[in-house]
Amino acid sequence: MSEREHTSKNFEQQLRTLKDKLLLMGHHAEKMIADAIHALVERRPSLAEEVIKSDDTLDQLELEIDNLCYEVLALEQPVARDLRFIATALKIVRDIERIGDIAVNIAERARELIQEPVLKRLIDFPIMAAASQRILKDSLDAFVNSDAELAEKVIRDDRTIDDLYEQMFRELLTYMMEDTRYISRALKLIFIAKHLERVGDHSSNIAEMVIFLVRGQDIRHGTRIDRG
Amino acid sequence: MSESAKISVRGMNFFYGSQQALHGVDLQIRQHFITALIGPSGCGKSTFLRSLNRMNDLIPGVRIEGRIELDGEDVYADAMDVIQLRRRIGMIFQRSNPFPMSIYDNVAYGVRVNRITRNRLKMDEIVEKTLRDAALWDEVKDRLGKSAIGLSGGQQQRLCIARALAVEPEVLLMDEPASALDPISTAKIEELIYELKRDYTIVIVTHNMQQAARVSDETGFFLNGRMVEFSETKKLFTAPGKRETEDYITGRFG
Image (tube, rainbow over all chains, first blue to last red; front, side):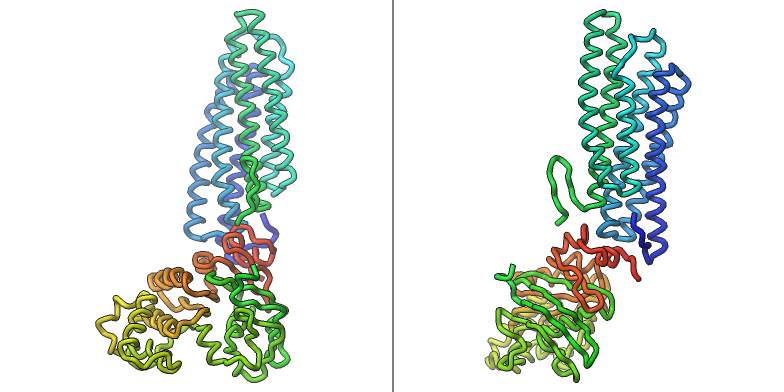
């Protein structure tokens, strides 16, 4: 987070551990989303099961990160960038955990969809899946590298994903109107699309916190509050 | 900002002989604000503080350039009455230094010296009021005639604050006022500082950054004789503007 190290080696070590755990958790959530999509597209029920099981790891990491944050707050009384880093960690840990839950939801829908015949080939689904995975990756990269410009890009890209969701919704709606036997499958795909759209929202939250971390500016809810 | 400045410092240079201790310091201390000065040892913050009421005058070889004003009046003007200046700008030191006399006389001392009153009843009133203002009255009201040396460290420091308040100053300068005290006494002093800001303008020098963060409205960060950054305390401690400030307050030294 900064080239210069703390004079207190213990504090430095705690912050490093915290960052490592967040990176591990982010990487894990990213993989869960990717696997859930693969499970659906490649019709692999065993992969869907793996995603569902692996959520425990994410939950465990969330608890460890929360505890470490409280420990640092109580024992080191961080200020300035260190304080913003802890505040950011406490917030994005929640977003990453929610992304894991979303991956589980997608895997569950995938598990059901695999049992049924394939609905017509979807044009927008792979585009949306790729876009939401990229935005998630970008938001985590922005955090790792303290890259506020990349974080701004994430926030812009999230709007594209919202648009893709609308498009996909309309596409699936036409299937349902065409043939009532498609309704169940189309609905599940709409759920999945909604989940992917939520991945974009959480990535955008992470990006907002990265901007806060790097610049000390709060840009949430369309405001721009400079600290103080 | 300048219209509410109680003390205004512009382009201040300070020399101990040939050694320059402060370089071009500009600072506005606002009325009824608590202004904290932080920075590592030797950064010049205490030298700066002591210059505000000319406590450095007696040190040989000292030379000051620039301008320091109290309510627009040049503090270093020849016409300035230094005794009067120090009555208006009181000072609290790191080590409490009660006089070896009774609690009552400690508070009354400055009032007598400044010939504010000789009336016994009026004096009783001033002593009680200032001891109350210093949050010490309830603890000492039954032993006002006893020696001040018998008080605890925290009580002694509050007595010194009462002694400073008794001459009705406008500004209080505090140099590490709580660094020799335990956490409970420290909390009481900090609470007191917060109360005092209604009536006084306070400048506090502290090594304890959490203390600066807790009690002050604005904070100045000094490094190597320069004031690196001055801003609202909550801004300085959440999102400082300068890299040097960031490194210092987050504990990334040298």
